[in-house]
Amino acid sequence: MQQPQDQLPSSKDSDKDPQAEQHNDKTTSLQSTITNLENQIVSLQTQIQEATSKLRSPTPSQTVRDHIRLLHDYNEIRDIGQGLLGLIAEKRGVRYKDVLEEFGVDADD
Image 1: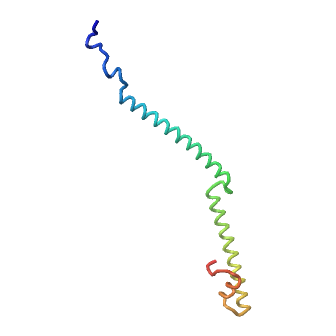
Image 2 (image 1 turned 90 degrees about the vertical axis):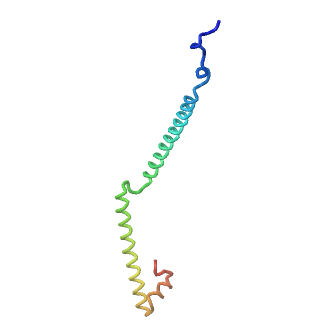
Image 3 (image 1 turned 135 degrees about the vertical axis):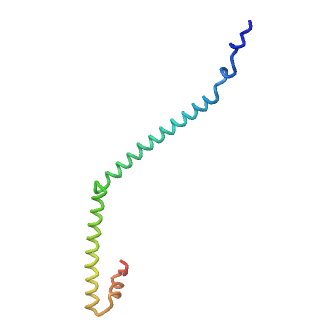
């Protein structure tokens, strides 16, 4: 018995729809990418927490204040050292540069 024309299986029904298959492939690929990115986010957040816990100061502003204080202390010590080297040069009657060379200090230090 022959089926009527409108009930014959079409080639669309027997084969998968190429657009649907492409859509499914793309969806699977995007879901995989999303999963990878979510894993990267978790990993980076863990790294940030570890790095933050190693900081001496908990806030950036405190870190800046500490750095400024340390620079101030360094400058005071350097000025005292230069003053002492100047006194040595004066006492010996030699140039300041000669005393710097004797102590192994560069003029830019």
